Every structure is written in C-alpha cells, then in structure tokens.
Image (cartoon, rainbow over all chains, first blue to last red; front, top):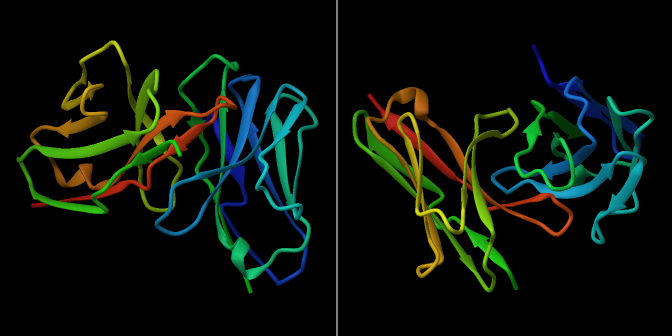
Length: 113
Length: 111
C-alpha cells in the first residue's frame, strides 16, 4: 500500500565517502522533490523534477546531485558528505506543477562519521 | 523577505482540551496554506489545506482558519488525545511548486 518509498531508512557513511539515497513512487506523479531536514528545523528544498526536467535550488551545494531514470524512481547522490550533511532526507511527489498537496516518503536518516 | 513563522516551538496540553497552533506570514499574501503532521523519524503527512478566500476548514476533530487581516492561520485540534502528540508544520507554496515550511510546533498531549 506504500505510495512513496525511501531506501534505506537509515544510512551511515564516512566523511567524504559517496552515498546514494533512493526514492520510488507508485503514484505515477510527474513531480518529485528532495528536501533536507536538519534536527528541529523545517524541511528545505534541494531540487525537484518535473518529469525529466531538473531544477536545482540556488543554494543547494554542488556536492548534491540527483538522477531520475524514470517516472517511478529518483536518486540523491552526495558525492563527498561532510559532517554538516547529516540530516533527514525527504522525498515527496505531487501529480503536476499546479497541484498543491505533496505526498512524502518516510525519509532517510543520514549519519556522517 | 517572505516569511512563514510558527512562533511556538512546543505546546503542552492536557488530554481532552483543545490545542491551538499558530502560523503567521509576512511580506506576501499566500493563495493557500497547508498543515502537515510529522511524527519523529517520519515524513510529513498532509492534513488540511485552506485557501485565502476560505475562512475555515474542518476535518473530523481538526479545524483550520485563515485570517488575511491578521496574516495568520490557526490550527485547532479539539478533544485532544495523546495520539495527537507530534510536530505540526504550516506550509505555503513556493515558486517551484514546492512547499516552504515553518519550523513546526511540537505538540504534547498528556493523559
């Protein structure tokens, strides 16, 4: 019954070691978002896709990349994680640009040692 | 700058009482505001959306109001239960169709 799935739920990596987080959806939504949420803070947009069109937020670090090979899947790659990248990473979807409500996955908690 | 603020970080209430959470916005007029619930270690879950031309929206024990004069939305949970304990996030729409969230209010309902 799960609609937006994120794997893994918890990820531990070492400082500087590349890591990939994944998101999949069964909703067939056009739009997918990646948000970063640090402890006791609001979720902050990193980037989003409308179909295959990629949009990067101006203040998203170059260290963060994303791939969307098809409608269902989206990946977040962190090339060289720093201690400051430890956070919850949330994937969200919505049907189209004009839609308002977003459907979030359970998140991946990233720990950088 | 355009801000959305939830000034109370935490709210503690007794079971059975009404919880009232506040969301304020400045320097713009949002077409709508949304409220989400977030449990520890989980993603936000959509609860209610209210548009600028709507005064009030209800869903079961939840009620949201939108006051464009005060630039404020209030979120009420009536007959609160310990299971309502969570962080509640207010959000407005961003230029990319994304959500811009307040920091949230952590609600604790004591039995």
